[in-house]
Image: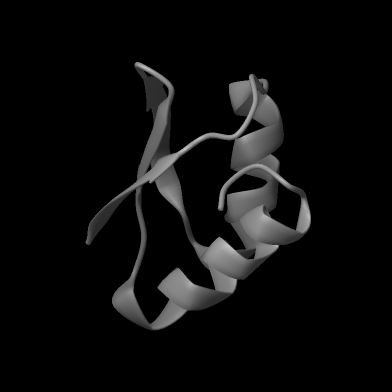
Length: 58
């Protein structure tokens, strides 16, 4: 499934990909301040929590 989140601050795409990798996130890109990536539905909440812990999304 494809998910979209507003980024709280500018960040390198490489850093985001490293955070998402353990959860199977793929095809990550940043478009107009929004993070977009694909992930399996059962891992979505875990990946979102990891991004929140790093202070990247709300």
